[in-house]
Image 1: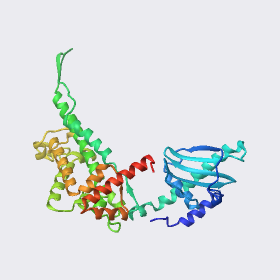
Image 2: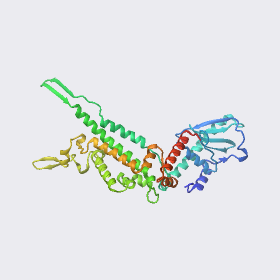
Image 3: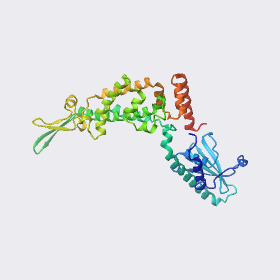
Length: 387
């Protein structure tokens, strides 16, 4: 979608309110020298997304130029007899005013008032864009920022701590009391095992977060169709349904999903749901005549050691991380291009043009490699404004 559905009406509102009196610089004046300039920086807190201010300017008929060296875009306009230039440069938004012929005492007040009007116009546009955001996202007019690397670092942090917990020495103390001698013993290994279990639970949660994020990023590679795959609905789906959409339901996919669900139920869900595991496990005890209070998950409790919160884990830490490695390797083999793109850190678009290009690349690895390389180069240009 190249324009907002209500662009004409929104432009009229801006011309009658925040940007009243703002007009394009006449073509005959575009080549004239600016003379003396006064500059003001627009705080990023006032306009965190400069593109919205650019949109506001375009809606009232201002011409956007650029990109250029260290500048994403710029525009010029007239207001109350003064000539202005607004530019999104590498270090932020900057407004300049040509001061020749103006009363020096009025320049600062003019700049403050103009910045205030530009910020007000931006807020008006933000509200309108927000109203249309879900529809546009579901139509594929959206980009998802790639957070794979950040989420993976969280997983690695807890995984490494779980595999190699900090050394805790045994504690063996003897002391004298009024009742005689007392002894205190604490097993260092038991404390290390307990710490490892805590970090394993955190690592499982972190891995699942990263894995679910990767499933969303993989959707365009699996043939995203806005009519069937409403993006906001897909993002809100349970992770198991996302898994089915990306990997299908063949024998290997079902087997891996089953094992992953078992890990999640054993390690994450009890901590995520108040300490209660599926079937209540060993956190709820049933009162039985003669026998007393017995854990509902009696067989599971017998098969594994008791850890924090009374939660028991039938899947060892090493098995958990081995499964995660197996899933990642399978992901890379099943969707190699998606995995490579995700690993690059590039954001993922959901528009038809991007999805169509991915489908053309699907059977042509050379084309995909070239497309990925170009996209990385282009992103570097944007990040550094090296146009």
